[in-house]
Length: 482
Image 1 (spheres, rainbow, N blue to C red):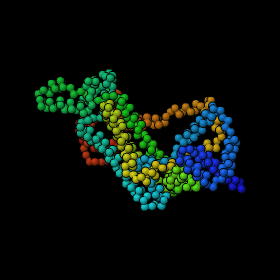
Image 2 (cartoon, rainbow, N blue to C red):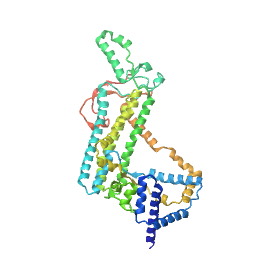
Image 3 (cartoon, one colour):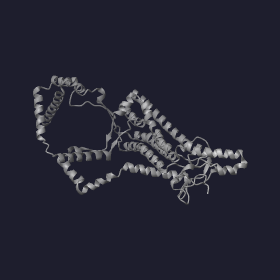
Image 4 (cartoon, rainbow, N blue to C red):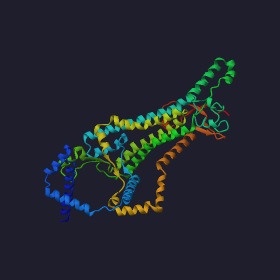
C-alpha cells in the first residue's frame, strides 16, 4: 500500500513538473505549445495537476533553505571539493574516443554484446586492419628518424652535438669552450653543421688543388666551429616536447588501468534504454528525441581473454611506439644546433603521435564515429555519500577539513604531479642521451664520443626505432682533439 502511495505521489510530482515546464515555455515557441498540448491532451486531469502542484509546493515548504550567503558558498565549495577530488583521484575506466586504439578496444565489445552481427563484425575487422596500419606507419616513421641519426649523420661526418658551444658567452674560461676542430669558440665563428661542414669542404678542396699552399690555407681560411646557438632554448624545447608527449603516455596508462579495473566478466557495452517516467512517444516529443537517443554505449566488463588480447595487441605496441618516439625525439632535439630549428622540431616531432587520430578520422565509418563519441565512461568513484550528505553535514565537514589548522593539508596541491612527471621524464631521457652519445672531459665539458661509420646498412626497424647502434667500422672518422 505504501509503495502504491509513493508511486502515485511520484507520478503527481512528474506530472506537475511537466505541466509547469511546458506552461512556462508557452508563448510564440511552437515546440513549447506542442509540449503543452501533449500534456493537456494526456490522461493527466486538471485535478491531478492541481494536486501535483500542491504536493510540489508542500515539498518546497517542507525543505526550507535557511543558509546565509556565506554558508551557501561554503557548502558549495565543500561539495565541489569532495566530488571533484574523488573524480580526479579515482578517475574512470575509459577508452580514447578519437583514436584508432580506442576503437580497437570498444568495437569488438559492442559486436560481442550484440551477438556478432555481420555489420559490426565487418567493422571490427576494418578497425583491426587500420590499427595494424597505424602501428606500421608510426613504426616506419620512427625507424626513418633512427636511420637518419644512426646512419646518415655519420656518413655526413657529423659528430654528436652534446654541449659543444653551450658556454660560448663565458669562453674561454669555462667548460665547453673548444669545438670539434679543437679551437676556441667565439660568436663570429659559430655555425650549424651544414654551414660548418661546407666551409671545411671548401678549405680542404683548396688544399687538395693547391697542396703547396696547404699551410697558408690552414692559417688564412677559418671554417669556424660547430656548436649550439643557445643551451637554454634547447632545454626548453625538450621540455615542451615532453609536455606534449606525456598525454600519450597517460592515455596508455589509462588503457592499462581500464583493463585492470574493469570487471573480468562479459558485460554488455550497448543497451536500449527508455526512461520509465513517461511513454516513449511522449518523451520524443518533449525532449525532441529520436531512436538514437535511447541507444546507450558504455564501457563495461571484459572477459579475461579480451583483456589479454587488448594488452598484447594494443598496450604493448602503443607504449613501445611512445618510448621509441621520445628517445628519438630527445636525441634529435639535442642534436639540433639552431634556435628556430629547435623550436620548430619540438612540435613537428609530435606529429608521429597524431597518426592514430588521423587514421581514425579519415578511415572510420559514421557508425564507428557515433559509437565512439557516445561512449560512456565507467566511474571508479562512488558519490553516494555526497548525494546523501545534508547541507549542515557538508558545512561541518568543510569547517573541520578546510578551515583552521587543517587547511594546510591542502597545500600538497601546490605540487603539480603532472609537472613533476614531465621534469622526471626529461631528466631520464636527457641522462640517456648523454650516457649514450657523450663523454665528459676533465674540465667538465661534455663532448661527442669517438665517431665510427656504420659497418652494416641492413634495414633493422627495431634497432633503428629505439636508437640502438649496430656494428661499426674499427677506424674512427672523428675524435675529439686534445
